[in-house]
Amino acid sequence: MSLKIAFLDSGNAFGNNTEVLPNENIMIQQVPQYEIGSYEFSDFDVIMVPNFADQENLYMHKNVIEKFLSQGKIIAFFGHLFRPWLPGAPLFMPEKIKHFSDYNLYPQENSSIFKGVLTEDMTFNKGVAGFFARGHYHADEKSEVHLIFESGHICSYADRHSTRGTIFVHAGRPLHGYYKDGKTTDRLRPQFIQWLHNEAKALKGESAE
Image 1 (spheres, helix red, strand yellow):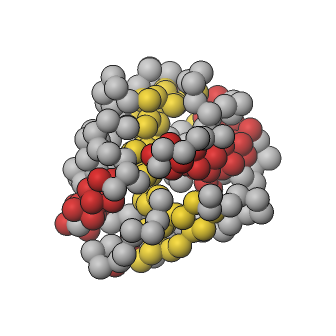
Image 2: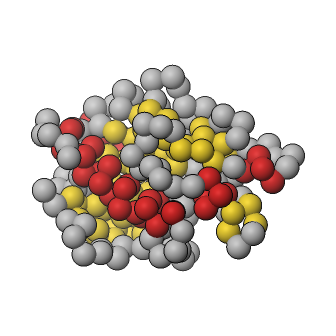
């Protein structure tokens, strides 16, 4: 099954990566973010919302997000949620940092997305800590936790209970942008895309790989 992804293009920042690599079996369509209210999303499996998206506009059109999820689809949001446009999602909270080690990030054992990704490769970039993520979410106990801080606060999680679809939230930049760093973070793109494939199949009642 080819996975169809609608990527909301902020049109105002770097990092809006819609490149498709060989053997990914995906299609990524850039959608100008201010067309969200008129765009037809019914043929897509996933809407990706990057960290530079206009959340005031998303809040104005939250009915589009709610409708998409009610159809058993996937919303993947990356960044700092500060408006309640995403059903059931708590707002972003900055992490309290007293020492650079407080930025340490740890994959959970059940996470196929972060499998084999080393803490130091996420935490440090050219010797500086904190680029990967700087805050957390108070996700509820029903959520599937993928990545946590040193404090135990949740950086990345999946919510399959608030709607008929699946909501994935990561308090950082889009995970499909990690694949050319020469570190274990290069695993993130293929593993995240495979997770999306599996999730879309599960929502359709098909067997995941």
